[in-house]
Structures are given as structure tokens and as C-alpha cells.
Amino acid sequence: MGTHLITGAGSGIGAAVARRLAERGEDLWLLARNAVRAKELAAQFPGARTLVGDLANPEKLSWAFGQQPLPDRLDSLQHIAGVIELGAVADLPAKAWQRQLAANLVAPAELTRLLLPLVRVAKGHIVFVNSGAGLNAHAQWSAYAASKHGLKALADSLRAEEHDNGVRVTSVYPGRTATPMQESTHRQEGKEYDPSRWIDPESVATAILTAIDLPRDAEINDVSVRPGR
Image (cartoon, rainbow, N blue to C red; front, side):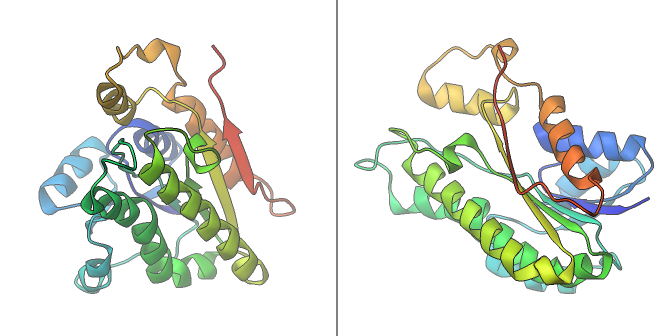
């Protein structure tokens, strides 16, 4: 039985992963942006423990964690939370860039920095749920894609740095997945949302669990999960 810290566990891919891990008796630590959200997550996943820290303000995570108990070790640290604001480069203000870079890139980097000693103890696994936008950028997706391209660079550098410490690092690149975030994306695009057209979050969760369950003689570095319909 392992210990896992998950961001974005309240819905979508994060909830699917948390549910699957809970069903097999793993210890869960779930990151919540505030105390109200922490209570909601605790009710959603009985037996899980919560940490409060706002990914929108990564510079405050160190202080927040200093006020709360932390696990002794982490068998996996899973960065699944994210935000998206679409818009043309000509239109997106600096704050839209800053919000996405903070939540999607700087916060995962800072969270990794703070918790890496616990992952090293377990010779554990760090998973970055990226996006197809982390490999290819399209019109209207500049800020989000930039944050996800940066997340790929973070994962690649971390993998090289931590290999000798026994820490495995995996980036997962899902295509469009039937989540509340995808519904929001469709609204921003002005498109009708039909979840049946897109990847089930459970399928992405299967890819993540396959990576962390892989025997120690191997490591999945990057995996793309594309819609099969």
C-alpha cells in the first residue's frame, strides 16, 4: 500500500485516479485550495487526508505547508489540476497569462520542490498530467499551450536530475477528455459540448496507474492518450 498526493482530485481525471487508488486501499493526500474545498474532498473520499494550498498563489505554498502536517513519504505525487483561458495573443491580457502559468507550471514546480524529499524517501513517482497542447499549440491556445510546453520541460529536466535518486517521472498527454474543464473549454470556444465524443476520465486514469504500477526495471517517460471515437 502506497501514499499518494493528488492535485485536482475533486473532478475529472483527478477524481478518477483518487477513486481507483482509494478502492485498492492506498493512502490519499488531496490538495485543496481552501478549507471549504478540503471539507468537500474529505466527504467525497472518506479516509483521505487533505492539505490546503492554493495553486493560484504558488509563492504561498511553502508557508501553507509549514502550518500543516505532511506525510512521511510519497509513493506518487500527481499533478492533475489545471486551468485554461483561451484567447488570441492580440487579446489576452497579462493577468490571463499569469493565472495559467501560475497554476499550470509554477505551482507544479514549487509543489515538486517542497515535496521532492518525501518522494525521494519512497523512490517514488511524479506524474504530470499535461495536454495535447503541451506538444502542439493552436490558434487561441497560446497561453495555455505555453504553460503546458513549460510543464513538459519541467518534467524532462526533473527526470534527468532525479534518475540517480530512484525517482521516476512521467508526463501524460491526454487529448480532449470529458471533464468539467473540457465543458468550460467548449463554452469558451462557443461550441456545443457532447461528452460522449471525448475520452472517459477513467481511461486516462488507467494510463496513469499503469505508469505508477510498472515494475521498477522500467519507466514510462511520456504517454499520449487520444480519443478513440
